[in-house]
Length: 178
Image 1 (cartoon, rainbow, N blue to C red):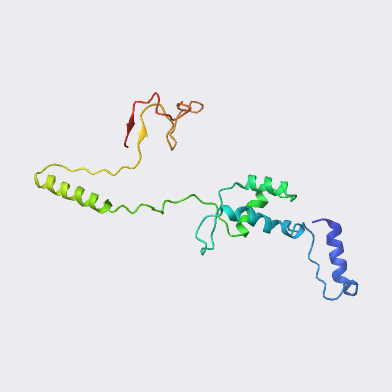
Image 2 (image 1 turned 120 degrees about the horizontal axis):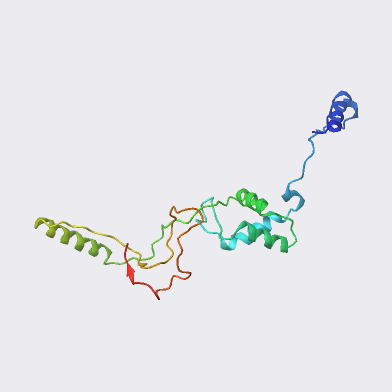
């Protein structure tokens, strides 16, 4: 704090007559961005709401737009707002930063249970004969060859594993089910 501010505060406390009744000295500081720009919160919510995801009854929502992109759009609309302010305002509006989660299933295949019943029956049949059984559930096929894969591996600093620019089947050795 500045010495002059402290002196002013001490003088005000000593000379209570100089204070206006019902006035409280709150101190300095910047006013909130939403106080200076009252329509900012409303405009941000209008930008995000059309792309907001999540259960409408849930208090949590999220958007796929970045805070930098939202800040840029709001600046073009005449607001003065940084991407960090947008981040804080989104939290204030009950948005959250999170990854997506696989929970939706649009397939109602009537043969899905039949498939597992068949696998189970085959397993029992082979086990009775004393044969080993291995059941693998695989959903994704991967290209075989020098292609980019999800995840990271440890390698010497400055020497990353070089892979093809495009993951097109041309030049691949085929596909495999991991």
